[in-house]
Image (tube, rainbow, N blue to C red):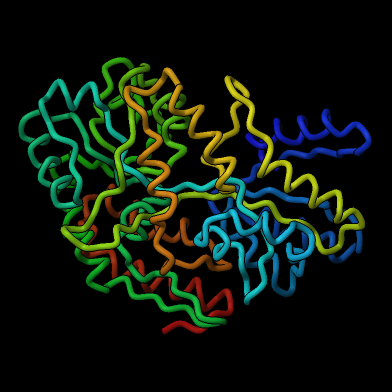
Length: 395
């Protein structure tokens, strides 16, 4: 598992002294790194070494883990009771289902909401937008009235999961071994048309929130982030830890709506899966651990579990903790809870990583000054090449 999930493994081992737990951490992210593919191929060759359970920050890992030549992921049916599995949202279960078989459970959801700096919005007498159009109009005002302040950013390797997924851009629609990719669909081009003026006027910079440059320009006590569409984990990982935005400034508003279109849909950035190994000789204990980690583990304070629990009953307990969290300017939980059921199901997970494709094809060009509208077609072509290289037929 990654370092962020180490506390849950340690807590399980402490509460289950009869279980011998060998806990190994690794870089669970790496933006599409092939760490696990290399390791599983080694274990398959030598016929030993497979861990009973793996957690990955790469939400698409179960897709390739369940298929040849890796053939690692065990079906969860009969390992975790059906009435327990039924309490994950449908979108989460779908992301863990490969060729009709569920092969993982997600630890957390990472639904995109609109993060709001209430202190700055009140100070500037701005109204929190409800639609993408209102958000864009405010970005235009901010550039004129308060240059240097921002309403979002477009420099993440996953920015397309925030802006394009939520607005129903068909980049990953899987049907068996076929994937439909159309980066020039109107649901994609309309987003580019909305973003390009904001990228140009500086209110949505093509920078990553995790860079020193971003923190220096927009973070700290004099932070300049008015609004930011982003996943549920941004409160802790971005505003608190990366940007050091003081307490009593940040809260969450519901995902933005496209004009008056219903239902409102949003994207997701994460949703880390727990995967059990079909090679395990300890599957009952593996399932007990995964069930405990996703349905029971919920400490408070500094040991609080990272992210919005995917298991609905645990999410309710976690939300109650967040509602009482002194960091927030106002209760963020209504927006977070509503967005959990609004993740657009038309974006499927694929066996190849798409984030490096976005970074290389789009983000580097945005930094060079090219408009997003001109980059969608080459992005689609690069995605097609990645899909075909992974064995998909592309239409």
